[in-house]
Length: 247
Ligand SMILES: [Fe+2]
Image (cartoon, rainbow, N blue to C red):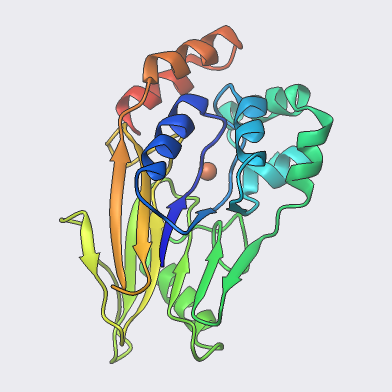
């Protein structure tokens, strides 16, 4: 079984269309979307319309939750806050209902789990060692749980806990990584709609359950088109600039 993992689309229609076109060539059995469907970019309704027509597993991210409950956006920086307020005004009622129904986590059998930030919070990052360690500790409560997919940082990541209990973050030097069946992993595919690891291409990943491998991928998309929509909507030019830089 092959699973496509996407995350942090953030209303970037051009990026989403390119990733979905690529995924259609991949012969995957399911698509898992780790949340933050809205926020930052300028095509919230178009992206939700596209997602609604698919049979994906979609999760709620912190921006999706903050669109529904404005007080959750109080900790956002001013640019993120303004973009989300704009999205809240734009969103069609039916799509609001779609966001309201999104779960925070999703389990696949007893071995795989998916979340936005961490399994217990859509707002919390896994970026530092103590954060990775904390999530592995949480995972250990379920004996068979091997892999947790997460997003939120907009950066690819592969955290491991080996057979001796050592926790670390593995540098992704090759796109495809064979995983150890004895190990436990936290995997972040990067962001479709606002990548921040220096590569402006829309990121996603393919997880192969039989091979027990993860393949980090990215696809070029119409960045200029996405930038144009941001500027036309009157959102911060910074949001357009960062797409070109992938930061
Ligand atoms: Fe995000």
